[in-house]
Length: 450
Image (cartoon, rainbow, N blue to C red; front, side):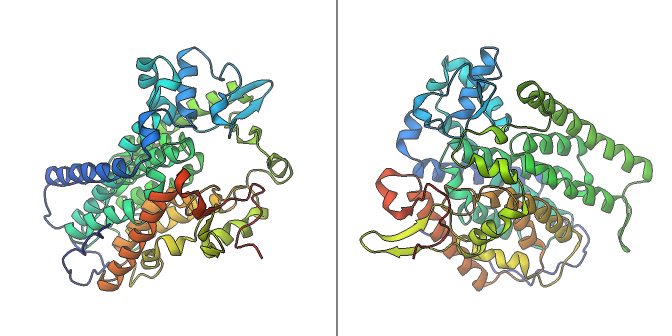
């Protein structure tokens, strides 16, 4: 696959504050984002598994949930279908539930209603069609930062960075799957990118609140992305740092904070009600009741614990491919290290200088990453650390605002990332390429066996 050519060389990207510059109009930026969506959608559909586009996916949990709602039920009304292998369903008081956040299932309600049953919903088609929404919105985020003088990246660079997120990170293999775990990431990234766009300068608090609420309703840990809006609003109000020019008076700032918190609170209240009715606990999404082989470790250590930190860091930092005699290259199903799938992320950790946009994204990325590192699961089964999708949009903001020139070295790292992730997108969870993956059902083998 041909790698995208580096964008035209730009001058050194200082992150020092600068006055907003006239850039292309927002209408033209929207057209560019639409074009990016169309191109990436073509790529995603071209590489998606044919069998999943022709029928429902084997793990169509969201379609099953949508169909249950249409029949007036919160549970499935019986055991999960045999084709799912009962994989990752919650069992509680004799009933079976989908424990994943309900927002993606809500997106499938009209499709389930039109199809008449969950098995007639081609759920993978829907989620592959949605996969390019997040990267397109991320381009608009980077464009808005440029427009406000908080990033000096060119339009071409911002477009290339958005494309690099789509094709040079684990998002690519995620976008191709269509099954429940990966579909959740696709929807969450779109919500997160919309949230980031609406949060810049605290400009659109209602949209930001709704978008963050929908992100939480897809992946609950994304509630920890809330500091991004709070930082941006504080900056607009001139609070906290010398040199921040107040754009809002105190009364306007408080109104915008309320306009953010009210819709967010409404969405969270609906989620809490949904949890309470199903599991008797407003904070329980159902993962504690998953009918899985490693349920004892959840019962012993909980869903989140320092006990899991070493194992998760082992995957994030040292997951490497290895050579198996008779099989060739093997990727452990716990996934490859983050620096191997996206080596250009080093630019997010190695800025030339930082500004307030950089700091806001860094805080949000860290707040979201920490719960993932304490979670009982590494993301298994995966090509690379898929939980990084939860904070990757913020990492791309760090790259854009870190003030380091994105020269040949950066784009070579980007080309390597595209090549690595193209392999994952083309081989992961494909029967004909199963020999590339080492799967240990106990989840205990993190690295090449002795």
